[in-house]
Amino acid sequence: MILLYELQRRMGNLRPTATVVTTPTGVRYIERRTSSVCVEDIAQCSQQLDPHKYGFVVDTKPDYVPACILSDFLYLGSQDAVSPDNIIKYKITHILSVGIQTPEVEWPLPVNCKFLPCLDLPETDLITYILPASMEFIEDAHRSQGCVLVHCNAGVSRSPSVVIGYLMQRRDMCYEDAYNLVKSWRPCIQPNAGFIQQLKMSD
Image 1 (cartoon, rainbow, N blue to C red):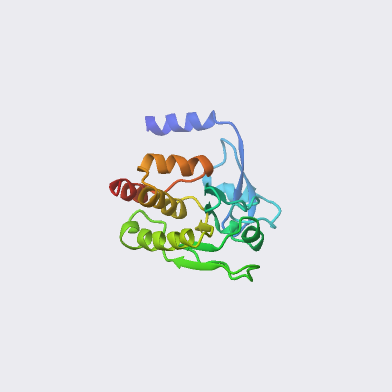
Image 2 (tube, one colour):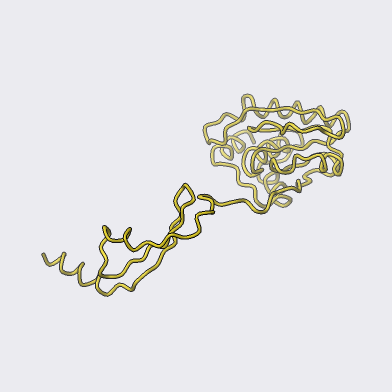
């Protein structure tokens, strides 16, 4: 009883609050709570807001510009960077799509595209299939004096891991140097913990 009394006393000292709640369907309302309102009464004092909103965060800043990791050869980006304009601007001849299909658009120039299935999960095996297939494709672009764009969905985990692996295996970099180089040109990268562990173990 003493604990209940203490809780009630403390609740009486709470200041009124108003919280904007957005449901997954996009419905928004103001939830008002005072020290005297119990949880069951909250829905009765809710005020409906503009319903024409999304129930998720909208990306209003598409990531169109790929990062140049190795001059005039190796580019890294998100799926937004895969565009006809970038094909021309950066003279892209090869597109490596990691975990997400290459967009089906009409390219202004001949482009060699490769898709590698890859989930952005720590347990996904990079070493056995993803990296060897990536190395072969990227080296093919290098041998033909082309330019390759490596991308995934956001250009944060999967495609940076592939590029880091390429720098380690084909440019004789240690993990830290490869990671720091990619990070310096694309600061948003963050390979998942499993990818980092696999890359470090292959160092």
